[in-house]
Length: 361
Ligand code: HEC
Image (cartoon, rainbow, N blue to C red):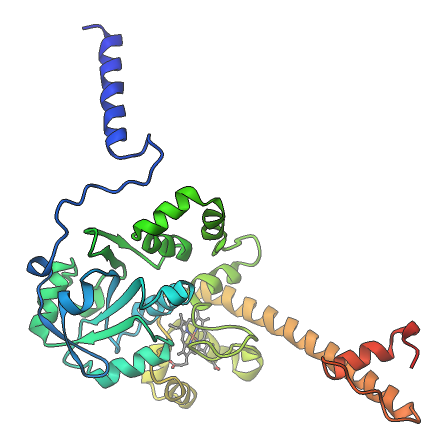
């Protein structure tokens, strides 16, 4: 056989493999799912939900459903709360699909400590509602279930942060993670739904919408911003209100710089030391903990600079608003008649009208 023949044969074999995988055919076809795994594989071992109801693992939680399963424990001081916060973002995006097409199952690895009440507080802290079930049970049953799902860590802190995602009806089971791009995590869940996959192939608009949910981090902006967006923003906003954690607006004014630095670096240690501020914050957010993300001092320096820059921007906006309000008050003080009623937007609209030259009145 000539070299040419051999290459031709190899190319044909490769092409056959690609065709079998659906790659050349341009489809997203899935590996053939002969007989979806059922209760025999997954078991019907009983688990207990956050409201104390006993459920059978396969029949009540998996059967006929698209599910996203992760493992966590409420006393975890590092990754669990970050993973849950990032899952909560995907949960929000899934919107009305949750509890209808998709179900999240968060199973504790520490059932002895994690009572249904503790699960309920944790779930509430992350705004988990319809379609997101938190589960505990006996250690024995949890161990059996986690082994089936590939969670074989022999110490709590070593557990996996990824998720098992699957469609029990079609029998497709995969792993996905919320620690990378959340868009990809969302996409990996949606693609378990054959109807969704088909709609993407026939509906350019759906594809465009799917691609437009954008979680790209712009590294050129500010080194601290990239860290903030990937490690903090799933729980905190700066100036947009409380999410699962305090709004960090003005935190660089409110808190001592040294305290802030050590708290961002080792919140668990600061809390354990009995620090009053940390204890107070912890009590205000019972379900969610500020995680120790293993940041190094350089990362924390970048974050501090980013938070300070954000605060300076907020302060400037506030000063501007205060100045225009003062100008409004001065203008009103000079008027002999009562000010015109503010239309719609309150005093700001009034100010705009007062200072518009052609505005007349
Ligand atoms: C999983 C959610 C979560 C993530 C992720 C997170 N935090 Fe927090 N953070 C909290 C919670 C909750 C508190 C309140 C204290 C508590 O309950 O532990 C807090 C408190 C804080 C505080 C104190 C706020 C104040 O008013 O004094 C700062 C500062 C802070 N976090 C910064 C950060 C930074 C910076 C990051 C990213 C590196 C981050 N956090 C990531 C949940 C989170």
